[in-house]
Amino acid sequence: MRRAQANLVALVAALVALTTVSTLAVVVANGALADATREPVERQYATALADRLVAGDGAVSVRENVLNESRVDALDAATVRAFAGLPEDADVRLRVDGETVVETGDVAGGTTVRRVALVVDRGPRTVTPGLDGRDRVTLPRRTPWVAVDVAPAAAEVTTVRANGRVVLHDPGGLAAGRYRVNVSRRVTPELSFAGADLATGAVEVTYAPADSRKVVVEVTVDA
Image (tube, one colour):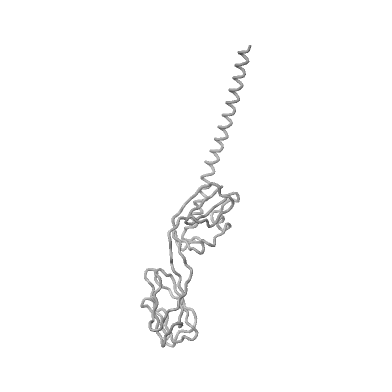
C-alpha cells in the first residue's frame, strides 16, 4: 500500500514538473516568436528612416549622403517620426557621430541601422575685402555661391570678375545693393574688382563655405 502511495506521489510530482517545463517552454517560444516578429518590423522602420535622412532629395540633405548641419540640428521628434511613418507605440533615437539629436520615449533596445554620410556647414560668412592697394579676394574652395554687397557711396565699383570672368559690370558704376554671383565648386573662387578709388568698405562679400566631416548616422527603432 505504502509503495503504491509512493508511486502515486512520484507520478504527481512528475506531472507537475512536466507541466511547469511545458509552460516555460511555451512562454520562451512565445517570447522568441514575438522578438522574431518585432525585429523585422523595427528594421524596416529604421532602414526607411535612415535612407530618408541621407537621400538626395531629403529634407536635411544637400545631396545624396551629404547632410546640412543646421538642418540636422533643427530636427525634432515629430519630424523624425513622420519621415518613416512610425506608429505611435514605436520609439526612435537618432544619433549623428555618437551624439543624440532626437530621442522619443524610452529606447531601451530595438533595432539599429547605420549609414555613413558627410555633414557640411553651410552657415553664411561675410568678409570685407581690404581693397586699399589690392583689388581681389580669395574664398574657400567649393563655395556654391557668393553675394556681393556694394556700399551706398561706392559708385566707383564698375566691374566684378570671378576667376577672370566678368560677372557684374556697369561702366557708370554698380548701383548700391546686393548681387548674387554663381561660382564653380571645382575651383578656388577669386573675386577681383575694378573701379575708381577703390577702398576697404566699398564692397562686402558673403559666401557659404562647405566645411565637411564624415559621420555615422545611427537610427534605432524600438517598436
